[in-house]
Image (tube, one colour):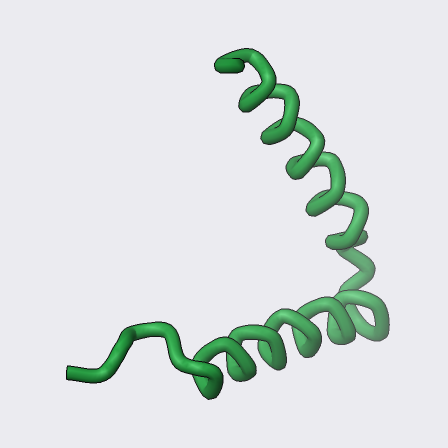
Length: 51
């Protein structure tokens, strides 16, 4: 049985994420990097609560 997360799968995920961010920048203007940053900060605040 092969492991679920291989280097090939990781590279495909990375490529899809880069393509999404590039498409956002060029076509859609959803400001995804800002949204991801805010949500990451919210996650850090939520995790700090449980410390």
